[in-house]
Image 1 (tube, one colour):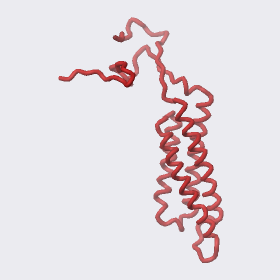
Image 2: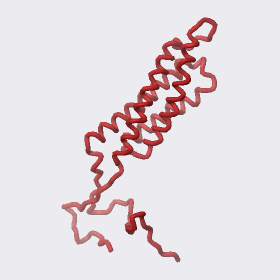
Image 3: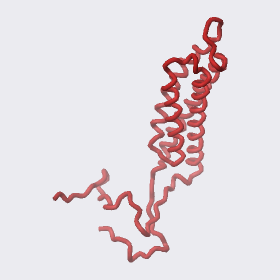
Amino acid sequence: MVNGEMSSTSGKKAHPMAGHKQPGVIVTHPNRSKPVAQATRATVVLLLLASAALILIVTIGGWGTLEGDIPILLAYAAVYLLMAFFVGRWSRGVLPMAAALALLMFVFALVAAPSWFARDKAGFAEPALPASLLGVITLAIIPVQILLIAFAMRGFQQGWNIELERLDSNADHHALPHST
């Protein structure tokens, strides 16, 4: 039988019930109550929702002319919606992924916008929405992605995951487990 203890990089022993709620201990997240962190979270959620909406408008509006891109764009919108859900629940881990996907979408939109304007001529199949409008919406995706990258990285720096433990003043302190 192997009997070992896990240790963190700081050399402290990990608590045997790490990750489990202990009676008489209150876990708080001090950075989440700061107005700047709450504003950053709300902004990232809003930018993710706006990105998903713009992508869906371009996808649905250009359905007849977007040949192989439809599954990719639908998946992008679904992932952005899922990320918005997790950011709304203070999940800091999705923020770098959101920034990376926003950078990729920025490049896609930068490349795709001129082609929508080029389709606004005679001889091209007409999408559900006018091609010039789809071009403008595609151009609108670009600054939204830049803002999403900036705010996601700012949120990542704010330390939403930091937890502080304190004893509950109403708890029976003699019944609490003693640390060694």
